Amino acid sequence: MRIVLKFWGFMLVGVSIAVLGIVAGNVRPSAESAVSTQYYVATSGNDSNPGTKNAPWKTLQHAANKAVPGSKVNVRGGIYNQKLKITRSGSASQGPIVFSNYGKEKVIIDGTGLSVDGIEGLIEMQDVNYITVHGFEIRNYSTTSRNSVPVGIYVHGSGGFIHLSNNKIHRIQNTAKPVGSDLIGRDAHGIAVYGTEAPASVHDITINGNELYNLVLGTSETLVLNGNVDTFAVTDNLIHDNDNIGIDIIGFEGIAPNTAYDQARNGLVKGNRVYNISSNQNPSYGKKVPNNSNSAGGIYVDGGKDTIIEQNYSYNNDIGIEIASEHADRATSNITVRSNLIYNNRQTGIAMGGYDNQRGSTVNCKVVNNTVYKNDTLGGGSGQIFVQYDTKNNIIKNNILVASLTNVLIYNEYLKNAGNVVDYNLYFTSDGSADAYWTWKNKNYTSFSAYKTGSGNDAHSLFNDPKFVNVDRADFHLQPLSPAIQAGSMGSAINGTQDMDGQIRVQGNSVNIGAYE
Image 1 (tube, rainbow, N blue to C red):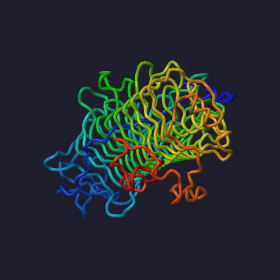
Image 2 (image 1 turned 135 degrees about the vertical axis):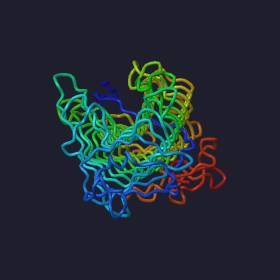
Image 3 (image 1 turned 90 degrees about the vertical axis):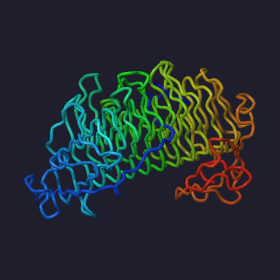
Image 4 (image 1 turned 120 degrees about the vertical axis):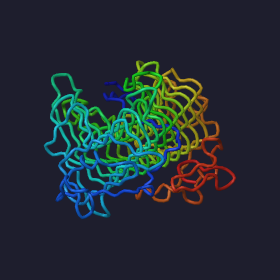
């Protein structure tokens, strides 16, 4: 999907990419303590063996076909040029089936030369429960065929209590060439969780401590939860150097057969570090490379609901965090974006709303206590917070916003904007208040006082240097005399939560503005 963005006299052609999340549920970690049976796989093994440490099996698939609830498949070090299809489940009473590298041995599952049939995972799970996949390097699964979708780890159908941890996923690629003006059909994912049934969901999913990098994704995403996915945690992952969206929480794409269930929901996106995510070199956004789309979000919610996005680092991406809806008459709702550090992103820091007037809305979301620093580095004028089409009843409070060279802090060119509350923020530009810019409901304001009077926003907000400890070292803690200290507004989205360092808010008489308490 292509759009034209108009910022302070500039025209930018791009593709909106958003990042959404859902409120934390009771996602259960894997219960390796319940493991009672040990199996072994080794490159030197034989599938006729009993699968013991001294007489291991040879193939991952044979182990998957034999594993029982409460068992652990220990994979010895080496390179396995194999696919792994997991169709057997663990259980609540006997424990999960665990697939793990043995000890500290390096296990590589390599897809070189393996076929990709439709959408297919190098590791794949369908309709399973109580499965853990831990400690593998997953690499080199690629295709040059349009409409084939290679995935590092692919979970689909229904099922739950699935734990993906400490895997390293790279060089998952679709390198098909666009045909004529048709740029789509070249897609790949690092990790994909698709809830494709209804009412039965994919639920209680934990994706923790993985690294995903050097992926060629086309119009798809690095790590995605899409369709009927209910209750998940995406935590402490390292996602970098990919040519499209980092983390994506999606709804309304027809993944689930019943529209009422077709939204990823009840999630937590926490403690992730996402950087160097850009569509600028991606032929799916224009055959000319670089294509100047610069519209890949580090974290994007597109149609998801009821999710918390907190304590993440998002930097050097096209967009830091976006909560939006690409589908007309559909809303991204009840997303809380709090205590994140968002800096040096090319288009904007935080975006919300549909990217044009043919899209959907962002409703009842909270953007609170984030530190948003010198995004809009391309100079397009979208500022630190970009409020797009159809935003309703959202709260933007307690954020530190420091402008880039454009001096634009908030940009909102759409009139379809109702019930949004913007207050208790701290703004700053190096050129001072008189040369700072805001756009609200398509009216441009120069100077802080003119903006407050004209927009009715930010009655309790400040314009002052936040006094960070050391921005050259990306240390955005506050100095003792920072005006942000205890200058924020209290509220249910803040009290009892944690800042970027894990400290409980509130430490004094009131909450600090920004990501650090």
